[in-house]
Amino acid sequence: MVSTVIPVQPFDLVIFGATGDLSHRKILPSLYRRMLVGQMPAGSRVIGAARSKMNKAEFRKSVRDALEQFVEPKHKKPETLDEFINAIDYVAVDATGEAGWAALGKKLEEKPASVRAFYLSVAPSLFGPIAARLAQSGIATPESRIVVEKPLGHDLASAKALNVELKQHFDEHQIYRIDHYLGKETVQNLMAIRFANALFEPLWNSHYVEQVQITVAESIGVAGRGAYYDKSGAMRDMVQNHMMQLLCLTAMEPPSKFDPDAVRDEKLKVIRALDPLKISDTVRGQYRAGGGDASYLEHVGDPNSRTESFVALRVHVSNWRWSGTPFYLRTGKKLSARMSEICVVFKHPPHTIFPQVDALRGNALIIRLQPNEGITLRVAIKEPGPGGMRLVEVPLDMTFANTLGADGDLPEAYERLIMDVIRGNQTLFMRGDEVEAAWAWADPILNAWDESGSRPLPYDPGSAGPIDVYKLTGTDGHLWREIAA
Image (cartoon, rainbow, N blue to C red; front, side, top):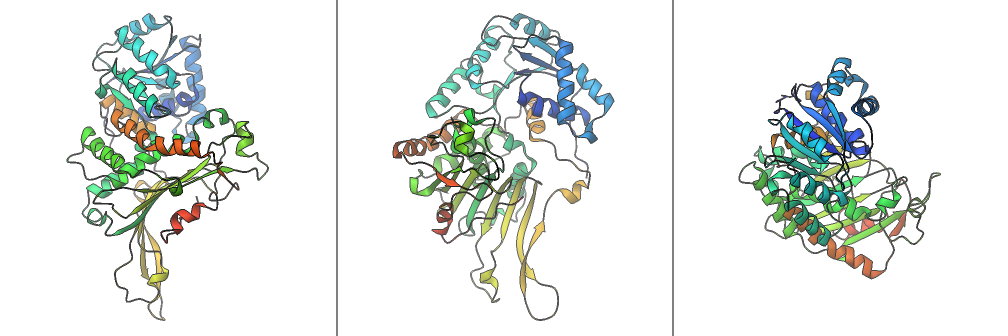
């Protein structure tokens, strides 16, 4: 099966912070891959903007080096690489000063008919100043789009302040708050499976769903970024944004249509229906030293840090659809494997005629985000062979491997999201009130942890987190799924 490629309009994408890691590792390779499949039209430009005093040739060399490092060998086509590099330009711009803005405006005026998008791959403290300069200089038009990356605030107050700052210069329909998890094919397929098929939606409620588990596990620690991570922790870094989005897409009501605001209205309703978290419904942890590597406290350089590298939550959505169904969320560093998935566990049949059914785990729909994106449905079948009715559990494979073939590729999340920016489609981007609602839910438990004075529980690297995490599910008679690649 070959995916359909729909070209977008010619565009100018200005990347502020173009010399940084995110630009080199994700944004530029994603744009190159879009050109490779024919989606980036002729005449489009990618304009780097940063404080570094370099010329176009020097920046182009850095882009080529980045593509050599971060693009898979099978995608390196010399003619396409050259074409992409020729679409690269650069302007040295001081985000908080006067230098470079006139030159950037002049360059954009060369192609006034192109879609203008501004990707702010910079520190959040620069979002406001750059937005103000773009608007006040006339570089941003009423049709321009501005893309901002997380963190979108550190708490509710700062998130509100950021929204106010952005909306002083851009309308809400121009602001694209990016969450790369929403660009993953499997996450989008969750909506397709739910709302394009009659099979699951009638069962997608507390009458038939026993529990939902959402796991984002990483096997690496915070070495090299400890100073940043220690100011956020697992709750701010993962739960309040990425995992909240996964929860919303799993729990939301069917929107009236596949429209940006219709979808985001339903996600907002989920966040507002969340019960306030109690400390007893949370487990926090910090990884110990082990396997020849340092501990979390050593990685962040603070023996007294109370920032969590692991968090697990028991969450309830108080509405008619989900009343009584627990949602278990967990994320952490230095766990046994790198794994991200959503697991919807269905209840056992109300009456069993097979003696082994109680020993089986039951039907489960598993949406795997990484590694090996795909979807499986766990079902019970008869074990082949004579000797009676022996039941076994098998996965019904709904991954993309067979349809895409051995050499098939799923597009990177940034590829889809950047093209949606150019199209002007905000469906997979967060709205301002959605971000504020998520912080309004997260703030009280963050404050409660601070006020309690308790330290996160230690856990061994390569484990599934602190031992107390099993109490969260055990209280309800449930078990966590194994964290495995």
